[in-house]
Image 1 (cartoon, rainbow, N blue to C red):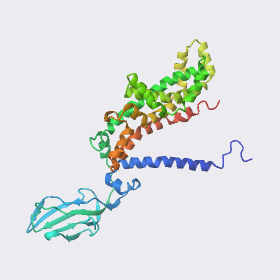
Image 2: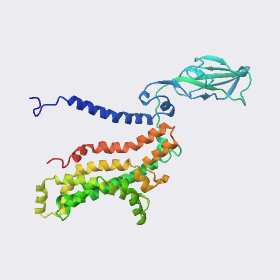
Image 3: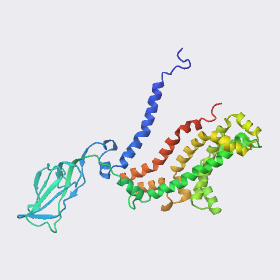
Image 4: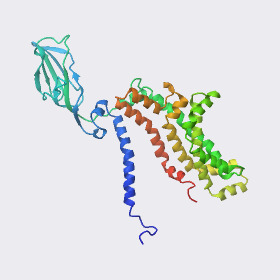
Length: 379
């Protein structure tokens, strides 16, 4: 008897492997986005995020020699370091883009008009000439070097507080919070009352209302966007936060009522009847008994609704418009993809900022998710 109750299935290992693969598929891009958000533009363009914690060897952008000249005997000399204070080790260098690795470190090269250039492995250079360098165009140095891991907070400063590359992301973050929080709370408040009425109050047409709620679950919201916007314009709401709150409330109510009603129906009937015998009104039963017991279902819907409104782009564009002062994060990221397509450090940082809050919400309330989803599925 291989399939008796209590015996583990032989396919448990397959379930574990499948779960591990799903976790890896979700975790690797998120970790990569986090690591990339702290890297510089040069490192992102030269190597993948998985090599961010090790020294990296690659060709660096051309660096033009600069500095103050000093006279040493008959020679005019400029001393300096190509890499400033960075701990970078030079492995090859050149003065032409066609031969960027023409010379080894510590090699002295003859340039035009008696100029001589020496570059050491530390990046220190010495440029000498029998004539003054005043008014002359100094040479560029192409270098191949090994750079240590480098992480910076400048990306987040630019994204959240800057006025150039990441302009508007901080304001878009606040705009998204302004949209998501009321658009999550309002449907929960309305749906909780409606779900209690459909679950425990007797009135004509209750079954038809339940069927109508189920039917509304399959209606595509795209069909209602333009008619709803026209209705808002006709009654004076127009484009604004009130309009987008009402839109998200309308689109989220069917699922909210369905989830909460199924959960409330499964509550012990004796508790409700005993409360009525003791003289409690429906409002007292709802606020003091049903609502506290329904917290797992409320939290489950809150997660779905918050994630939906936070990541929404279509509804926000329709009911808020494209003004910079009211753009949400998803719309701002779309703009950055078009205008900052080459600045991957800004895009990575902006994208990670946009997923931090949903991650915190999910992990804080995940223990209620399964309990809320399974509500009403069994008796």
